[in-house]
View: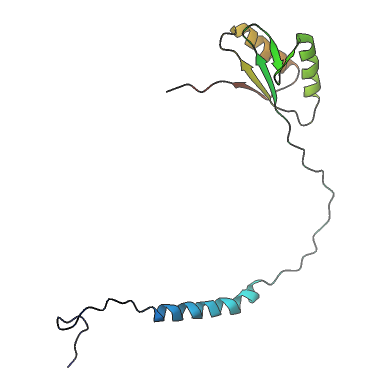
Length: 137
């Protein structure tokens, strides 16, 4: 007479038989080893040759700061208004034109910030960003 393995007379099997899983994995490995070289057939192409310009180097970023007393800093060093105009004109002539980060003290009057922004834009620089501090929650 047939007895089920989980009859009350017998204990339940507590071991997992992994032999079938190992057999399947070995067969899959053999299939992949046989088919892998067949997949790597390359198509012979005669690609054209062309001379291209190299990509431009990353442009540096220029930082302009306006202090509360009205002083102007170019990358951290003080600069006079006449020297600023010359530097901005030189900067606008570069290729690629670097972006300008404009920082202003919170106590600086708005008309000074707008004036400096107008100088930067009149010199031909269009990539200008106003830098602020993040607000606290």
